[in-house]
Length: 292
Image (cartoon, rainbow, N blue to C red; front, side, top):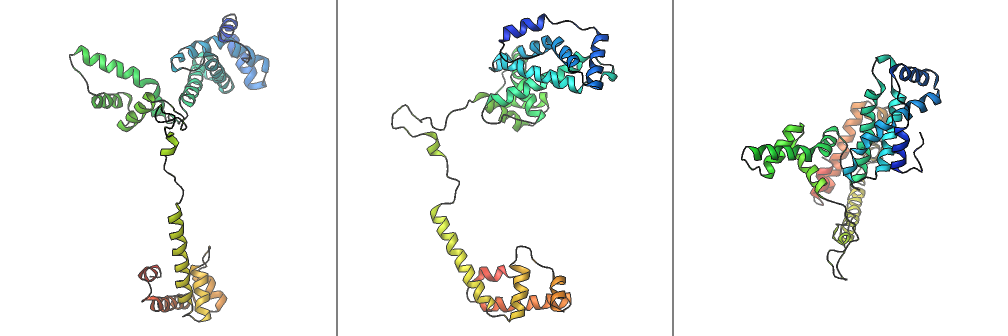
């Protein structure tokens, strides 16, 4: 059933005029689609149950999404249900389709509620669609007992009722209470008011940090050159291959190349580090610890 170009009233009228399928016809259409990919059977099955999809979409109007968009999402959920439905299980298609239609609508509502991702886990989804209803009921019950709940007690009871952690309730409460604002909006009504984006901390490296970092790198490079100059050619080779390569070589591979045992290469490496430490003992404790 094509949905583009129709108003929600038109879609509703068309859906109400669609045929009602008996169990036998429904089963035959489901088999035709599953076993033979008969698109006419799929179209007939989906069209017959669009009234169900529209009815479920109407229940989510309070979340502010356009009804036509909700119907579109409900229709997508209905088509997913038809594609995955197994007629051998002995369940009516309408019963199976309800879950897919609801899931599709809920995903759409949560995606479009805010530019900030509202939630994706099952507990967050449960909170999003049930928290206010549960809160209202808990407050009514408390009032009937002559009690008045503070906000912390309400949150705690909601967490217990829905079966989610308390911090999830606190997070979702903030998301449902707030709304999106442009970072280019001014903080006051004055013409010269600063924009909110001006208050964001720059996550990049500051100039002073860059200069300091470059200076440290140059110093370390000088120390390393000085330390390496205290080694003979073989020791420098071992240190370069073991510590200065992106992919350090193993003692065994160096031993094979130099014609030495793995243990002998380890001893030469330790001796080389000892020489480097000694040459830098009076220069920097940091380098001493680096080569420890």
